[in-house]
Image (cartoon, rainbow, N blue to C red; front, side, top):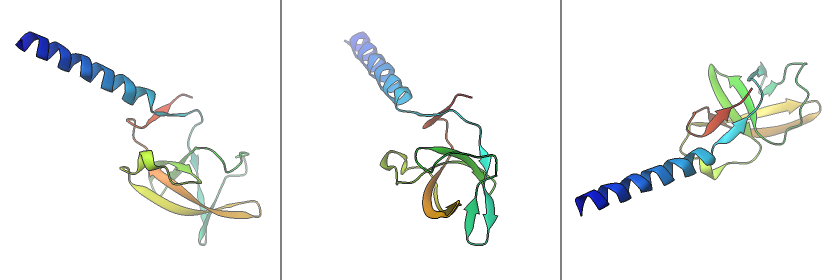
Length: 107
């Protein structure tokens, strides 16, 4: 009975770890340094992406992954809201501290 319990527990842990691995967010570009300009942060001139999706940034000495909308699945991470200026647009980003349990780097 003890052996069956241990085997079932091991199977549960394997299944749980696979599900956790599959849920990580894939980051495909290197981090960009956001530049402070008064109350806004702006992108380097070489950055030509729109505001949608996930963005890997370096801000305030911390690597963060930012998104326009709050991400409930990341609520356990340290979150910083920053004001972004992209061309003539100004908007808020929700930036979560990078954690390899939640994000996978592939660049």
